[in-house]
Image 1 (cartoon, rainbow, N blue to C red):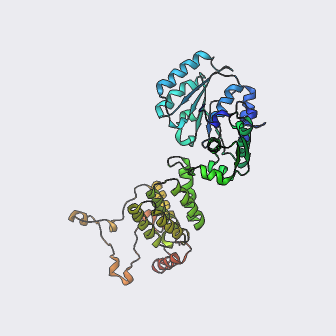
Image 2: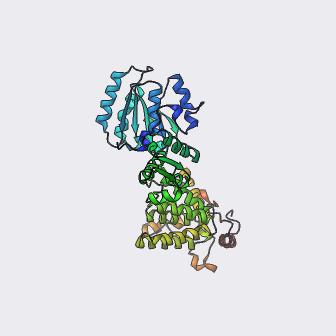
Image 3: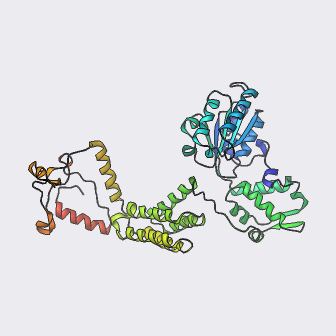
Amino acid sequence: MNEPLAERVRPKTLTEYVSQTHLVGDNGTLTQQIKRGILPSLILWGPPGTGKTTLANIIANEIDRPFYTLSAISSGVKDVREVIEKAKKSGGLFTTKNPILFIDEIHRFSKSQQDSLLAAVEKGWVTLIGATTENPSFEVIPALLSRCQVYILKPFDKHDLVTLLERAIRQDAQLQKKKIELKETEALLRLSGGDGRKLLNMFELVINSEDTEDVVITDELVLSKVQKNTVLYDKTGEQHYDIVSAFIKSIRGSDPNGAVYWLARMIEGGEDVKFIARRMLIAASEDIGNANPTALVMANTTFQAVSTIGYPEARIILSQCAIYLATSAKSNASYAAIGKAQQVVKQTGDLSVPLALRNAPTKLMKDIGYGKDYQYAHNYENNFVAAEFLPDELSGSSFYIPGNNNRERTIKEFLKNRWKDKYEL
């Protein structure tokens, strides 16, 4: 029998279900709905191996509904329509026996495939349960999402994972052929990354690799049998954005340890070296700016270097740059300035360029005043003249407010000396 352990010990009832007490505990949201027998269409959103498919099956069993299942990986619009037709024949509209249609990895459905579900959900031909590891706000079309409740499943905690192991030892007939002692579990728990299915299948791999009837599970044994710890990191999913967000926030927060840790997570997850370097280029300007202009030079050099070198050596250069940015003085004044200016542009529209600032490449343009009275700064003392460079309607506006750091305090003094009280700094 080749069925994996995780499948053999899959729970069949809510009482057997481990974790997600906020949903299926005594007072959980889904528990109450199951008791009443009234279930809305819903999306189960959570990391891999947290029991989404199991929960869908249990719900169908508990409320005694016809149950149909599709996988978004292998199903098309034709398959969806065929299942909906079967479901229409097996249940009544908006009855307690309304069939359940479970779609695994619904985020992989195209827009047209998701569109094909709308009528069935809206007219009550089926109750949809979709499972996804991706944020449904981005991956499920708004029309379908508005017709579903979204329930979030959390990764298994340490206690839950140990419970899964102990229950498997007690219940699985194949494991009971051996005498198993869980002496140490740290390696199994760490390598699982909170994924219950991964945990159980690794556990079975370790057990089956031992020829003796007595098996003592230790961290050393697990690490020797499990070849590689595959880091939980989806380069196209939400985890991708969460981790790079943590990376940039660590740099912004001047924490080199946090920056290097999240950098390591991305590197071990196989993130594109250019993506990481590009994010640091943005941070160098957005979060450091003129507090340390060399940061942008450093980030740009890093981008060019890692693009040429690639992994594995690129990790050293990325680390150096991340630490440099994290330990640099910070200012978002330039970032704030362009944001303010863009907002004013949106509010005021296309204000006229003052005549003195207009280019006058032809005689006609000169005759009508283009460039007239323009004061060439280099003709004045200190290469400066207090002219007006904004549209008349915005005269005296300040967009750039220097930050409170050594470099920008110097800039602030420069502007005060030049402009006196014209701009509020």
